[in-house]
Amino acid sequence: MSFKPDLKYSDATPESVFLNRRSVIAGLAGAGLLGASPLRAQDMPDFTLNGYDTTEEANTFEEISSYNNFYEFGTDKGDPARYAEALTTDPWSVEIDGLVERPGSYDLADILAKVDIDERIYRFRCVEAWSMVIPWNGFELNQLLSLAGVQPSAKYVRFETLFRPEEMRGQRLPLLDWPYVEGLRLDEAMHPLTIMATGVYGKDLPNQNGAPLRLVVPWKYGFKSIKSVVKVTLTDEQPINTWKATNFREYGFYSNVNPEVSHPRWSQASERRIGGGIFASRIATLKFNGYESLVGDLYAGMDLSENY
Ligand SMILES: Nc1nc2c(c(=O)[nH]1)N[C@H]1C(S)=C(S)[C@@H](COP(=O)(O)O)O[C@H]1N2
Ligand SMILES: [Mo]
Image 1 (cartoon, rainbow, N blue to C red):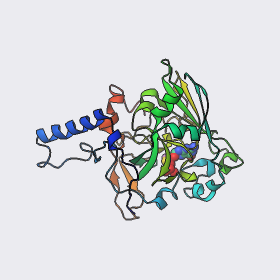
Image 2 (image 1 turned 90 degrees about the vertical axis):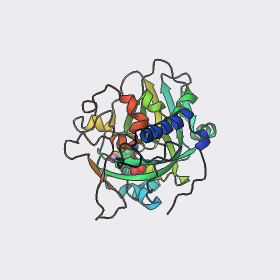
Image 3 (image 1 turned 60 degrees about the horizontal axis):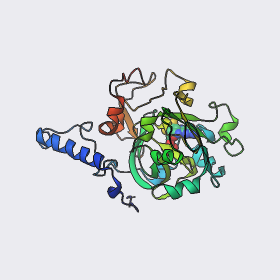
Image 4 (image 1 turned 30 degrees about the vertical axis):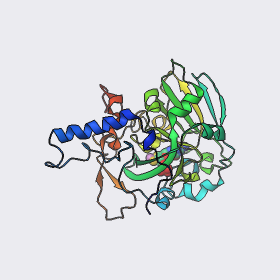
């Protein structure tokens, strides 16, 4: 299956990102790095000129919607596809509160009328060391935050998934401390790579992928990309995210993809690309999942093994 974008968004690409990208290429050419010596993937991530999309082959819709982590429906990779149909996603609203100018309940239809839906072909790397390439549809989270108006004192964003055990059968079990919670630092949340996804392959998001609205932060491990979001809170304190609360030795707040920092029980240096077949060799995991040129600055001066 090849992805045919409905929307072209190169027009909307922030010029700074585009120019930045070109100067990286020019710099490499000037230094004689293009041509002569082979570039390592981490030096030259394979983005298209919009600066965001990977040119790697996308996973199929079938793969994306049948191999999932969504513990609200069970822990087996097939459980979400099996059981998430029970979730009612319309009507849907998002409560935005905390350090915002206009707190309140935002109807999803009203939100969607005010934001720009893009398509973004992103790498997606689970902390369990499997990965996919997913053509999302969605809008930048910074657009949602602008609707509510971020107060100057806000430093973090906290997200919450729906709690509805009648429809989410996994929530009847103590698999995690419900509702699922995630968080980002405000600069991470405002970054143009950070999106709220509403679809894949130009279709509405399958329920198992976090319909009708889920976060996608492509340079972080998949568990940061919280699904079926109903609440967004601006705070001045670092939120306690579910997986960190469950096991802080294994899962942190930052959770940036990092091949140099092992999970206590496995290496993060390589990953298995879903769809590659059982004989496919593992591929190298890239720092910040290949987005280092776009997000590395956010962590300047930070010890990334301490802030895992
Ligand atoms: N609410 C909620 N969000 C969640 C999860 C979850 O169990 N519950 N799993 C996370 C994990 S571990 C991963 S890898 C991704 C999986 O997203 P996908 O199924 O769309 O590939 O969702 C993340 N978001
Ligand atoms: Mo994950």
